[in-house]
Length: 329
Image (cartoon, rainbow, N blue to C red; front, side, top):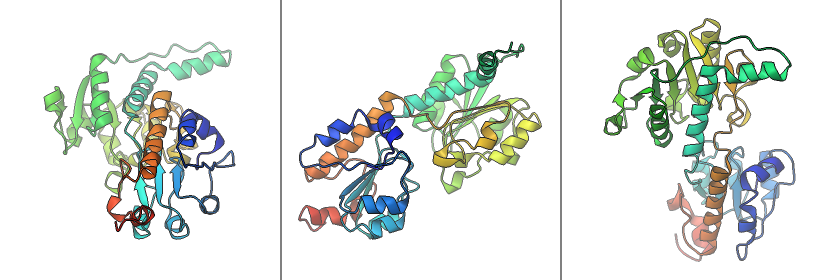
């Protein structure tokens, strides 16, 4: 297990006894209170057949090339963008990710960040904590305002319902989905930016969506708009966001992800006035953490039972597992 001490307790503490209780399984833990380097992971996992990897643990090609005993790597998160799946496949190693149990937790955090940005909650609280009398900061009522969601996947559709429940009009931009059956208006990106007082990108952080929200998009939003990002740091151009804040194009920004370590917001952006930043804790609730941890226990148990683990992403390339089970494939 690659989780450092803090993350092990927060994300896997309640599931660890379940993993250790599996018959025939011996668990080796990260001995450090920090994330492992690739070389440290390779050394520590030299005799291991499975790596249960925290979201911050990369899977470079050298890990699979230098770990002849490794059968599988299970990421206790959905994102596997830092795992070289092609290299794993070339070396016969199975890759699998976690169950999508973070949907409600992440959508609720997005709503929380929005309410904070709209009502200046953090700024006023900080003043009070410092012993100062906060100024009267006018807030913004969400009922009757328009939110634009870019990406109508599991989180986007869940959040759309939450926003509608507080009286917001919701626009959706997603060429791969049709939100009209759920009662939401489908628009293109230009219309969404022009009409929305709140902009919420909820797309994957792949190359196609890199800097999806950048200078041109921020120039097209309504003056005084609020930007919320709980998806991936790559989706939003932080330099352009800083400029839009300074020019007043954006009134506030709520972010749980960014270009910092482990997808956390960068300190430069997080420290600016008008920014409410949290350290990538969208899925950090016991309900989600326990479910994702339990999904890796389920995957290890599947290997012990001689069956393909659920949520495998390259099952056709898991030749080491086949050999381990005494099968051809």
